[in-house]
Image (cartoon, rainbow, N blue to C red; front, side, top):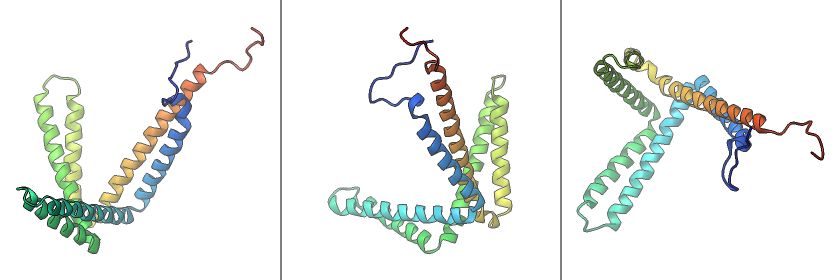
Length: 197
């Protein structure tokens, strides 16, 4: 069996699997924490989105003032006002922001479900059609459940979805790291190699 060679300074999964496994474990734990505390996670995400909107608005405003005379400066200033206003609204009233984010998730799932069902209808006789159709139906069912329970679903939907995403990402990172560890074991020289051979 040949040992794969890597150039010095390049990343090798065989040697770096431990750090990937640790990172995956941390991400998975954060996901579990988000799943256990979905409301707190949703509020934290709302604050984060609000802060990003304010920072983005400040950047737009700065560009509008430095680019005086440019035709797009008025548009930049309008974007700045809208971004800063929306960001401050989320920061001052995170519950309203959480409701808005939940409505965005419902809209996304609805559009995604319709799009996937449309694609599956155009894939007559092709492999994977049923999987795409099932994914579309699942998106529509989730959108319907979130909408039917709204506004109560806003208390847990964002945090739960983010938590599930983090958990699956962390587990996939750990799985890749485990594969790298097995690769390291496969190419490691035997411990009982004769001396002087």
